Length: 113
Image (cartoon, rainbow, N blue to C red; front, side):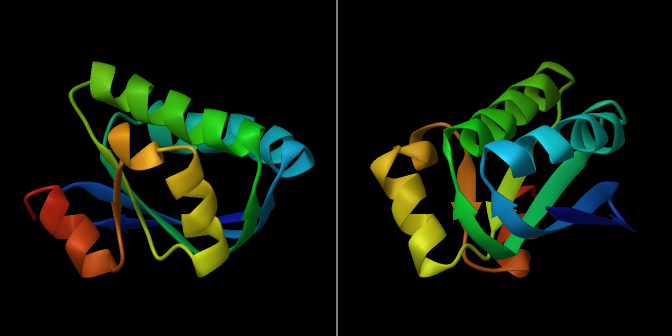
């Protein structure tokens, strides 16, 4: 699991994820994601176009990070999920908890940018 961060105007952090967000990927990504995204206390948009699979620990990481950001008055918005990943999100009813959009533009609009 790889992560690339980009600071956008707003202030918004753009996070591009690549690989499998399974148990091993979530374990490898957990601390860097939390320290670079949640600890900063900025809105974040997460590009999932490079994510090929998401397991329960990956869902837990995304939900936990979104809740931690919400406690800081910020939002986390997901975008660009493949059909397989979106199907996993649908099965888990993740859209009931997180904002999920198709494009980066829609994700930024969801943040009011």
